Length: 518
Image (cartoon, rainbow, N blue to C red; front, side, top):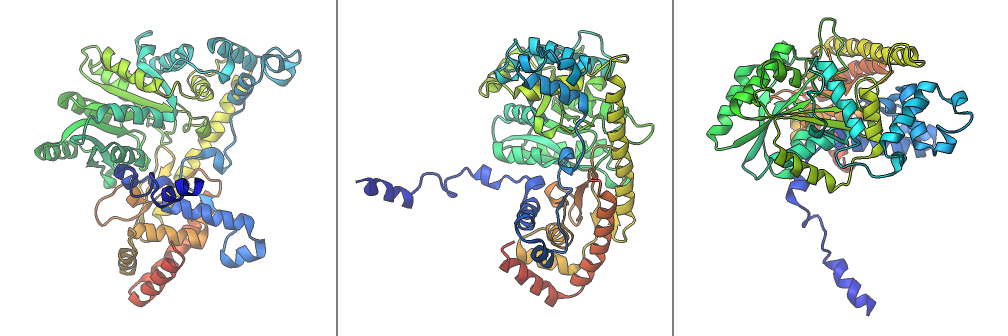
């Protein structure tokens, strides 16, 4: 009897690759795509195969993951004071803030902050659900951070317009879901762009309307290009409802001036487009004289907030900056010009997940409200942050200049964020081989780089680029960055020799790749 019930279901399962949503199947997220999965497979082999055998199979003993901005995974140390507070939040009171020897284990400013935060959490600690928008006191910390950062009037940021979310990505997907009413709706995204935006649009069934950044001018913005892109979309009957701005840029590493940000804010106000301002790298600005200029500050100075002339959603995260606390999943969105009834719908959407994770909310609070001069841990906190920042700044210069010096490469200076995005000239053999394999040419390059050197990058095709351009994105987080550049230099020469004007060799390599099921 049981066999009669089970057997037909095995033959005709309800959830199969054929029944899964087409939007989900077509969605791609390059940062953790083909190259990253192959890197993980090789890493597994390296960890389980005896050293002598693995060295024979691969000319390296570990993978260097430069594909994703994940600082702690590449040996960036956690900053002490925030982690001390987080430890106290996790501990029961009798083992933490109320332990008789607590002051021997933790500084007083960590104990005091943890006590205040536990009170804000209703005395339940981080093990209980919170308000669906996030703990009110933590949202107040975010509001005051924004006011102080932008020189805004005290009390001008309403905590009811702030949602604490699981990383900035949680907030971004929430707003995009609200914006994409049907398949006629589109969001303007930069080219190149962070794949979260294109992947989410694919999943929601919305349209992508790309606008090109100008590589030759350091990935600058051209307002004529924005107007061109919007006009073409409208001519096709596309309903453009939003525009994504990433500043500092990912994957491009550029930093926009205040005037450029104001131009974009005015563009969105003029065309009645919701501005989605991705500002997660606002601490990562390296070139002397550059500064972070938020979209909210631009809107405020232009009088658009007071006149209700702009709809703006700004995103920030604990994952980047100098904290690099990706795994904590802390982030927020602050909204301007969003009506109360829409806010209530967004609250309903947030409530379906009950709340974002409480430790992430706590880390967001700590990011936004640190210590003051004179506090016991202030000097050590600032010293740790400064050391991390200076390391990032130095490696940004080292990697961007190093890649740009490779014949056949062109790499704009990385003045912000955590990435370089070089273009790479590829020989004809690569183009032909990649076409037959169904890969983009820079995916074939990235696979070869991985299998030869152990360096994991993301093909530039995963971010979008002009036709005929090839390249990749790499972080400069790793302390191996100097050797990474040299290995990329050495590999590129050999790679070009292997494929240059050799169709036969390209076919042989193609066959080897297919046989290895790559």
